[in-house]
Image 1 (cartoon, helix red, strand yellow):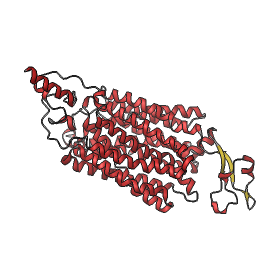
Image 2 (cartoon, helix red, strand yellow):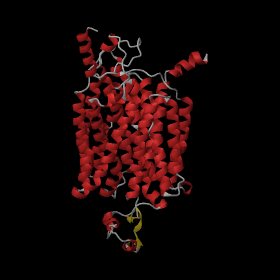
Image 3 (tube, helix red, strand yellow):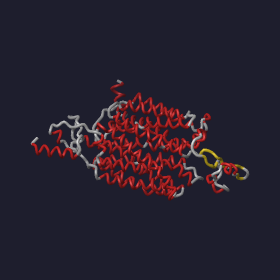
Image 4 (cartoon, one colour):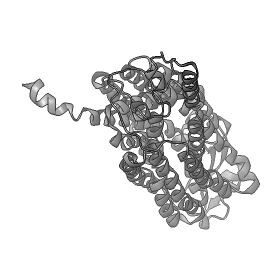
Length: 506
């Protein structure tokens, strides 16, 4: 009775359970990734790394009340001598910034994340993805948990590298699994929900990193943040290991049609098709341009992620925008993710994969102008325009990967995602370091405008150009009779084969 009744009903919800499970795991991984930015001052003060500076230590005072602004003082003696009505209001200590912090937040994480991501992408195309994802999840949640107990700076660097190695498998592995579980008309929505984990983790890091340490629960200060994320993560890792199963690998998109860019000439001629390689796939102009557009867009997003807390603290020190930033990134971002996926899935059957790219181009174009407003206006209008921008901007990530998995062959799908992420994260994740030299030349606000809002606009243009390299709607045929990969040849190779057959009479 169980297997024939309740089990049958529960089975129909399994794919949605999987989506929820891997999405929560991804959110926890990204929360661990971005916590260092919101807890850095406390972490640096505890572990003694990075720069020191003069900082305001009286939260009840505003800048207009101070005879001398703390941040303008460069001497520890002068800093500690500043008083207001006989009370000291400045302190000299670690500010959480400096080269040590930049290494910790960026290269220590990104170098391992990108390289191991490619390796795990290759492994995902050959081995059980569910089991690999379970191991990866366990690795990064344990690393986050142990971060709460570190005693030295190098411990934190090493653990962030381990965390990056584990988390690097989340996207290529989960993307492949979800692609095989969900049909085309739900794919962009599903991948948008999953990839929103990046922004969900980043958004949640604001209240977690800003306010939970202030409670000083059990005397652990910032450490309780990592302990809490790690404990919840272990539960998710166990559920992933016990309940996640490898789905059947299926051909999708162009590969699942009889009218794709390669045609069926070689199949009809009875010729054995060569094994498709990752180089055949990634060297296609449409994938190269899509990757460039995604890298530019990713740079815009990472520029905001790395600088938003610092920017708003610097320009609006009297206003606590922590909960506002959480609401915009998590709540507004969630709505944008869902809308982008629904719109993309709605039109894909009419225009083909080209419609997804059109949604990308238009969403980033609409997001560009309010993105400029979010760094040009005062606190209130900055948050309003940021919300508008975020609604449209966050449509992009899931749709990009829906496009990618629909235009690459099954045999190298996860490998392609891994390579795509490698390039996108190295370009988009490292370009924001130019914000500092540019800001010294033209100003911090102007620099953020260029690399954040400006790159949104550039990406929209590149996405629009990519659309013309994509196929329109295709008519699907029954491919159940053959397991051959009909994307093994490029368009030019197949054309040459047809000419050869005609000329030789084969």
